[in-house]
Image (cartoon, rainbow, N blue to C red; front, side, top):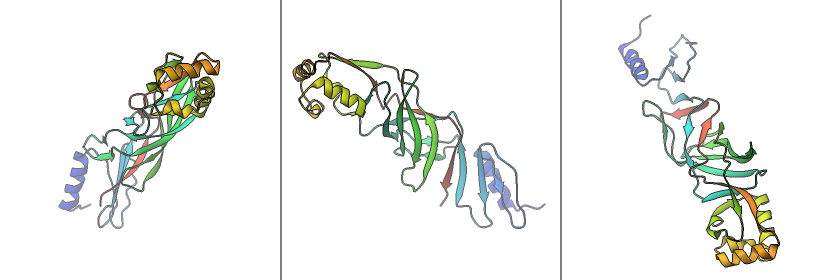
Length: 225
């Protein structure tokens, strides 16, 4: 079979980039399966490269909205995090740009809480993909008492269950006053007024605790246009 120098050069380039390709020529269909990616070249010009990001890949995330996440041990809380850094291939191809969103839930597991990713929304793209990824289990807790620094609560994403317990502890005064910047003396007053001395919650730092690892391969269509 004769393949022109142009096709040989293109195939050589793809091989150098670490991408295994499937080439579709007129009157010929290649059926070879690939382990990491599939690259379909139409008779004119390919518009998309299909890339598989393998299971085990770590995706760093952060939160633009919450300084921390506070939930009870048995609570589920929907949250959205942001991809903190570009995810690129070994050849330098941008796969997941920083600023992409990952939607999911913080769920109770093994005595702690874990972020379970459900959907990836690529930045500057219409692509919305199901994603099978989880964070490490967060087991560290904080016991909120009359001595608690109110800064712990400021700017936090607080689950409904944790919020209900905290508002019960804080008594008759509105819970939002604490979140809006109430002083330590007021926290003490609220705790005593509520008749409850403390509550234990899971406190998550979204910038360090919620990085997710793919549990299964993630397939992306990279636009070549």
